[in-house]
Length: 491
Image 1 (cartoon, rainbow, N blue to C red):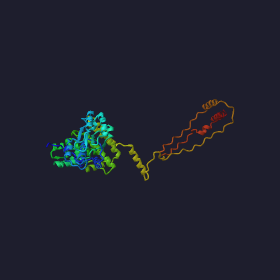
Image 2 (image 1 turned 90 degrees about the horizontal axis):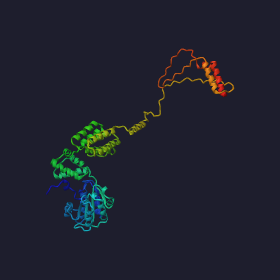
Image 3 (image 1 turned 135 degrees about the vertical axis):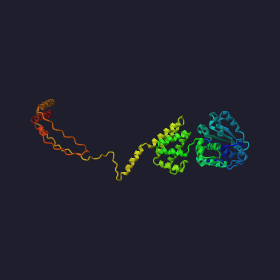
Image 4 (image 1 turned 90 degrees about the vertical axis):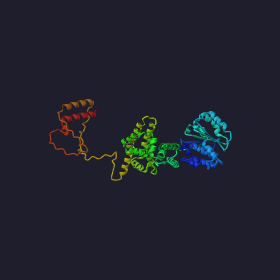
């Protein structure tokens, strides 16, 4: 017998063998048990998640001896024919090769014939989204009201390309990416059955690189057996597929949280020089930061496969940052991932993303200022009293000016004949010019600043300088003032 790869040898044969799609298996089981079978099913999901295998298992359950039933025997001849693709009642059609109107017309002609052996005639169309719009429209009427003995099963990876009129006539089942733990466990099971020593860390690395696809993981294991032989460790997985170990990812994350830019850039340089895939390293880094963010919001969350010792160190390093800071770093790396997808120099964009993320972790934001002010307000009930923005400290000592005596104005003289005020101003100017020259009284010095101590000034010797009172006692000045005020009042 010729060699069979692991992806075909360990393909699921019954509903119990389907891994990671419990919601689909349960629905199909209940539909068969309750005899509530639809005439059209649509399986949607990424590659390697079990769309074709689930369709074949459903076909076996419908056309097995005594069916439809859930617990069928996968080793009977009818089920073997369906599994090998040579059953006359189960027709598997490639949508990419048979996507024209002529093929759909042939299908519409063949649905009239009864099944040869089983109870149903089942048409399985893989990659159905490759059919043209004309082919879809030609299939509408038959798909909506097929003969009682006909069942349609469609599979696709891009449901958005299928016409809404087709989607509305099918029961849709979305197959999810298979969890990493499930894939790693299946790989260890296959290794045990094949007599291969597979380290658990190596199984985890393969499952992580498969990104939810069981078929991809089985193909990678097959390649590793050809490369390494009967013993496979994590180093072999990293060397063959260019993956990055969890320790390197944890070290890079620690450098980011410690804001050690040179250490982070040096690690990226070493990974690039050793031929590692930087896009895959960036994806692992984003996954690690996401795990830290979830752990800060939910302490019961796990470490995404990171060893417990390294995970505890990362949690301790992340205690200094609020969730919004880690979220900002994830946003920076998400933008970097989009740029690296089409860039030729991926290392440059990766390094720029690292620098920007470290800056975002260390920058001061308005939320930090608000938190500090809130803490000050909460602490103000104790001995600490934060200064209010409107309050000002009172000056230590402000010298008071001596009270100034109110000026004493002479009583206005009796009203005389009025003249224009301009002539009074002219006569006042002439009188002042004719008055004897006198020195103006000294101005009072400006008071010292409020925060400086004032010292009494030394007493100067009295000098015969004229004062304000002696100035107004001059007869010429008094006569001029009386004359001016009288004329202005009367005017």
